[in-house]
Length: 99
Image (cartoon, rainbow, N blue to C red; front, side):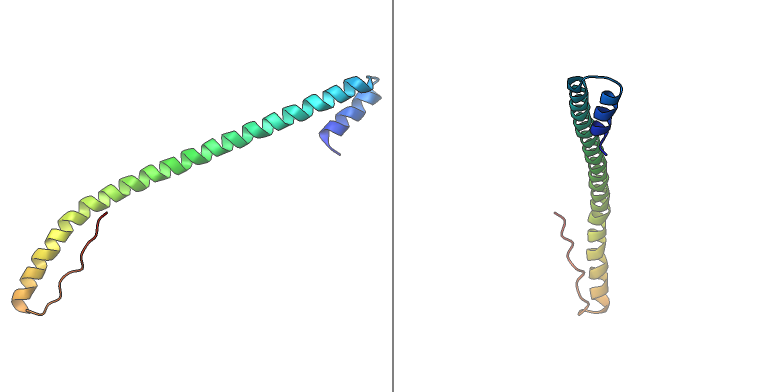
């Protein structure tokens, strides 16, 4: 049995008028919808906040990765040059694409 119907029955049993019981049930229904909408909005904001924080962390991780990658690319080319002195057929290091 729904809460609105229970309130309606309790109001009638307690001696209230049918109109009073219907108004109370209707008011409680609207309040429940508003509470539900408010809760959904709070949950959505919490999820957006969580995703935003994760995106910020990922952007920071990518910046740190790029900082480490640029010097590595230079080192790879120097190491390849030294390896070519020993073996002229030594393959080149793979290119590092950074977007």
